[in-house]
Image (tube, rainbow, N blue to C red; front, side):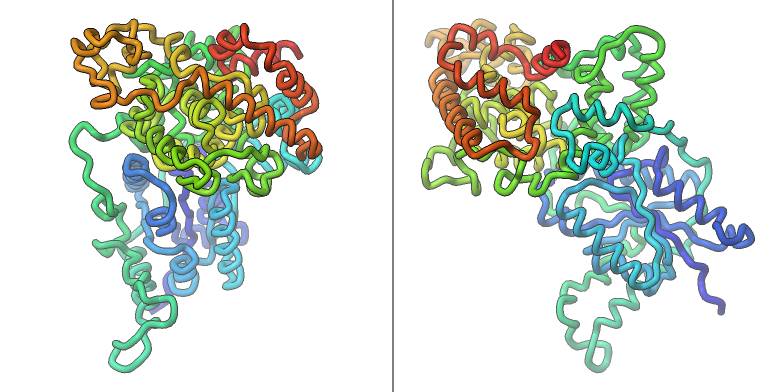
Length: 604
């Protein structure tokens, strides 16, 4: 019996789509029209694989709603592949253990994947897999497609360092070739037959049998193989199918508890088309003018989860926007829709070129600030900080605007960008003075669109640790929400205990007379907490702490391009004159960081 034909693997990670998938296109080119000879065009099997990595199941912070979004995206991808004669093969297990089985026992001699990001785990994993594959003679091709501009090339063109202001980033990318048009999804794909599936089943069965030592097929396993990973690789049904949620150790969600935001490439394209059909809205979009209090529907695209999972190509969104912009006058970066997409590239590039990007310690662009809870959820220096962190996480700060946002995050997995600004400022420099790393961890668990580069970058920005340095611009946990929702409809939606409170007190229930509270059914300290801090007091204390941290930083010399000179000078002047700003702080607190960026750009 002749040996099975060689196989190529397309490793889907966070590019869960068929349209504009560079790795898939590269594999198709090599599989259907091999460079060596067109005569062997049909001899290579193409295996679309997703690896269910136990690191993400057991170690990473991923909440149930993001798992649901991922599983929906995998099912959608599998359906699209099947409609084209193929299918998705989900291989369970540590990639450094299960992937070698593919080229040692399943005849795989080529692997293709899209570069994902600069996360330390991802970087280590990819290097390890590439080294293992090439040592066995398998060819590895790593493509782009995750971002608009190659991060390494941006860094090279910027003198070997990532541009650390948005304007300098735009200056570099303006001189680079525009992102190419997106490629459509292929109409057909090489089939994955039952024999191909059996090939994988047999490969892992053989690997499992080889692990056993001793007589009669029983006995002990080799060191490190006691979990029977090869036996489990094909899943409980033995056919590498997309897992069900029950395969994971999650509490079952009750009806109505699911996120309203669904996963999958087909969903992403529908959301994209619906938004792009609102041409006027696209042309005039300005992020600071969208409302963080809007719900059903939200006041922005809500495409971020699809960009995170790669169910939507960033190049597809880029070129759709450019086509609409070509028809008339439109808003500009940083506040335009295209500007929002470019922020994504900005943070990816910063993460790629910054050592220890994900933490404060050892991070050359991050100011070293003496936050509470720097090393974990508790702090012996301030025992109350742990209670504050828990209250913030659970939406029990006593500030309805903050609490409603955190409840929305926990229930739906998505909150508006300006809502993220509010709660991040409150946790860090605004009110609780808790490390931004703790906030980033909570967002990592709860956000559907959690993207390491963006999440860390935004937390450093909003805590005035990097990128942004006007630390005295503090979001009011009362006044900011009122700008967008005077009646408090958003608060009443997510904090139903307060729904009967008059609008006059919905943002500050502690100011309501006892009779009003009683009529509304609100018992402060019982069914809704009193404020855990006095914002007017602690915000001023924290400004002093920030000034001290900035002064120490300036004494120690400049950061490694943590900010450009004009921003550093502006921050220093602001700190020196902070005591003269009392009459202006209330107004400044109501202005958003995005508005500040826009005005800075216009001055230039």
